[in-house]
Length: 591
Image (cartoon, rainbow, N blue to C red):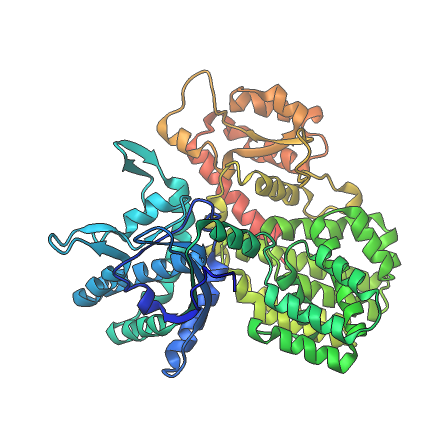
């Protein structure tokens, strides 16, 4: 397969792999960081739940590739995300077993997690040595005495090492898994573990480190599922005699921007509804046989143009796609174009991709409906509803994106075939409204938003929408600009209670400095003028038109808090955060 170094692939269960008494599983430094999140874990947990309900079912978890050139170690070439996640599942199972007072079971699970000294019974090492991006915390929580709390600092080599970033990466994944199984009693937990242990992989072991690097680069560099992509390519090339197909296929691949597997799935979903990954190629091939491979290639090419145009955030590409699709009313109206682009900017900021096939089908239905001014307003309102829904449910309430996947897939197929755009749109809006998180769930999470390097774009987005809520396109002032190439932007984030005042803050004020209740987005000019002035002085400046300018929300801020600004402290910041949260839910992101 890869030459004489390769041992024949073999089937191994998870129980086999996590019971191997000889080899520690090590994630090498050249591997990427552990980056699975709730979406990936939810799919695995759903599959395990299905396998649990069917005693005869064995879940296939793909291929693991190991390099065994180092004695006593299996170095992971492919499979670290799954191996680390399985370890986190075992950790959650251990916690549930302890809660159920299943001490014997907890000890058996511990044997899957760590190697112990048979003479002392103490831990020698964890079985899986995780990515360096989470290694310290991962090792800590594998300890049998772990109390369930994720550390902020750990003693490493005699010094206190900050590990909050590591904890923030692992904790949401662990918490999600634990929430899924926390109510299992003894029998339920055992059934779940049995399904996990019976799951199997195809294991390939190589004995050459250089070869390991080569395989790693080839399997990870492009970031796409080569099985479906290559099978579809071979099918198309064998079926279509036109020599131009190679050029068209190459552009389809380029338009996917290294997400070809996802794009192929979204292409199918946009016209046909939900599909499991394992059935994707078969469905595409059947569709090609039914429609004709050449026509299907043309459809896929058009979808790829949409996919790139709406994800790239390049306005010229969006205009080109609108022209190609014969949507002149959207292309020629600056206001309409601005609304479209803002929605796609938001979805990219949210890292929400499930909406792309649905939106493509919405455009198909919109064009079929006549694409007049009345229908255009329905279209733009629907896209805004989708944006608002994902901000509330996914960004603030941190629900997994997959919760909406089935509805979106069904709705995409419905839009693709509908002759009543307005009724279909109204039905989707009604369903999204039912599923929108409650204010009780939203408000405290929104009020906890804080300034960090990774939340700067989101804070700009929030104040952009707060400021422009209820305004028409001609009045829109863009406070959010996703262009990362700009070193200086027109609007900056201002800490109203300054970070570096003349007199030091008390402890409560320090903890509240970065909270959303203490933040404003103002012009760069005003930001430089405000410096470290106290809140009362800043409020005087904000009262001047040259600083509030066209920003309506700043005028509202002055009117609401001018009388209480002398006592701008932790309590005032908390109250403003609550005020913002209520206004956000009831006015800005309502639908």
